[in-house]
Image (cartoon, rainbow, N blue to C red; front, side, top):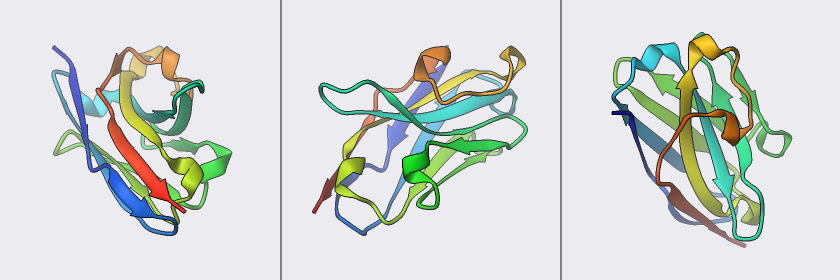
Length: 125
């Protein structure tokens, strides 16, 4: 059974940093493409950053240069380092996974098979 568990969210002032983690189990971690996405009430889910099984990455424009996605295949853990946080980064952040054999990853959450429960990030201005 595939499980994804996010942690590391919290409250921070604008300009600050947070590091999110996503612990995974039940999958051959290194073969899977992974995604961080976020959602705020009344808005659609937004893909933030993705990393494929081959290590290639992608970011939505609004976080480029501020967020860094990485994966530790030995620890089966996905990370999102968030620096220079802005008020508009406030959201519930989720990690998601899909098999690498499906093809290159995307920033579209609905194309991923498994999601975690989310961790809240609140940035005060």
